[in-house]
Image (cartoon, rainbow, N blue to C red; front, side):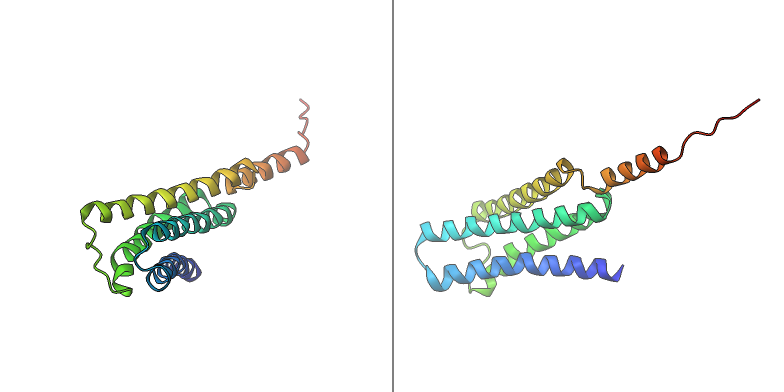
Length: 154
C-alpha cells in the first residue's frame, strides 16, 4: 500500500514538473511571443498525455481496471489543480490573469489530454491482450484445458 501512494505522488510530481518546465521555457525563452507559447503549451499537453498513456499501459497490465482507475481519479485532478493554480504563481503570474475563459480552457485542455492519454494507453494494452483481465482469462483457459475431464462410471 505504501508503494501505491508513492507511485501516485511521483506521478503527480512528474505531471506538475512537465508543466513547470513548459512555463519556464515560455517565461525565459519566449516571453511575449504568443505563437511559440501556444506551441510549447500544446507540446506540454502532448507530453502529459504520453506520460499518462504509458502509465495506463503499465498499470493496466499489473492491476485491475478499478484499482488503477481509482488512482487516476486522484492523480489527474490533483495534478491539474497544481498546474492551473500553482504553476502560474511559480513564474510570477496570476492564475486568473487571463480571465475566466483562459482559466477554464486550461482545465478543459488538461482533462482532454489526460483522458486521451489514459484511453489510448488502455486501448492499446487491451488490443494487445496484455491487460489484467485478458491475462486472467487466458490463465483460466489454460488451467481448464490442461485438466482432462474425469469420466464417472455408474
